[in-house]
Image (cartoon, rainbow, N blue to C red; front, side, top):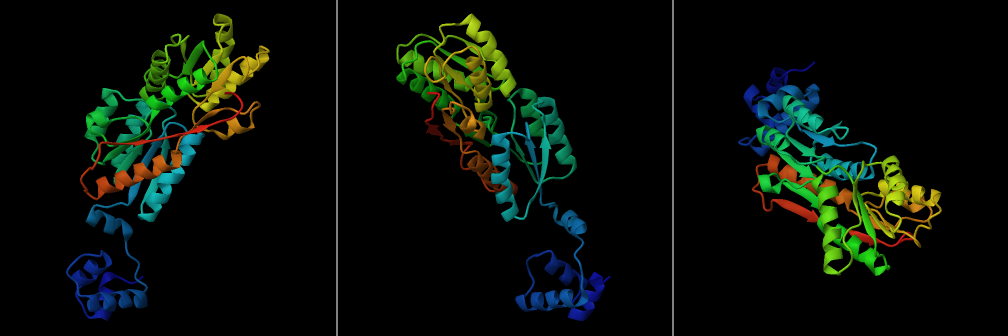
Length: 329
């Protein structure tokens, strides 16, 4: 196997000059670069990428932490960020926290040990333990889906407060008077707290009855089903239901139908996320479409800027959404 010495001898230059050329460093004339690269080709010299990375303190690795792999938001987001990182010559290491905040912190530590250049974190929630772990990270961290801007953590977020507000208005416009909300764990500021605050504000501004209930479930069809099985007995007057995610809404629809309640007529239902399941369920789920691919792209672009040492132009990026009109509302 050819060595650096072999290349230098064939090109008629020093080994340090060859090293500067293969590492794309400044200070080498273009004619010399061409001569060295021709010698590299003729010798069949292969650059030791590990040694090169150690020398320039670059690994071209970025870490991505997601709460679940089998998720519409996650899969689209990873597609978006992967395309951006691939174009920049970065390689993605993907980890699933399984919606465990302790695992998110653990993976931040692991990725730092792996010498990643940066981390994109789809966090389940924000607390001081996570904030401190991010602050202690040698690699820059960008949050997607949760807002860390108060702690000077660059973030890409969806307009969760406004989506709740719009959900309230859509349900009221369809004649609903007794409206409930099925959220997730209360520690999830984006998906539970902000979306519930949004719908509460809409009801208050329209002079409607206060939110009938705010139930806390999980990110699953089974959870939506179980929640509504209980809710329809506790709140038989329910005529409008806002679910924090489409999967929760799909479970809710099943439970309502089993109780012989006509979804879209007796009870209007709204979800969030535009999951493909909402299109195939009957009646089709009315929802809100989030730009998950764009969120991944924006998160990757922010991280690349941080890796390159570019100054932050904004603390967070807030992405909008589209109403998806179907049969349940």
